[in-house]
Image (cartoon, rainbow, N blue to C red; front, side, top):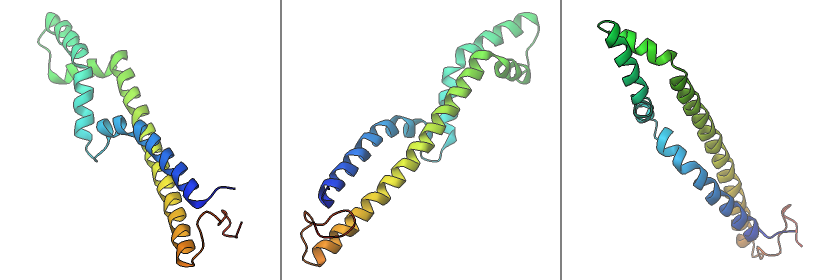
Length: 132
């Protein structure tokens, strides 16, 4: 049996660990802006794009459309897009885990407020709300 305050400490600790995993993903995918994510993809694929530009330029005058098609067909570009999609998926999963943890923390806080409001010690109230 754990006290309400002990369960709160565990939940808060779990949330802190989750934030460590979440922060770098949020930096790349969060804030609702996909333009930042696109900028990262552009940076990571710039060398691939330059290679294709050189190849197409040596053959003839390359259009931007031809360059885009060559880039999108390149396995390195496709791998980077897949990696970004997997990272965004992980970001969404962690975001949901954080919401769940936040709800669990709120529930424990409500139990603590109830216990304190009824002059019960939070150290003697078990998870089911029954006295120890």
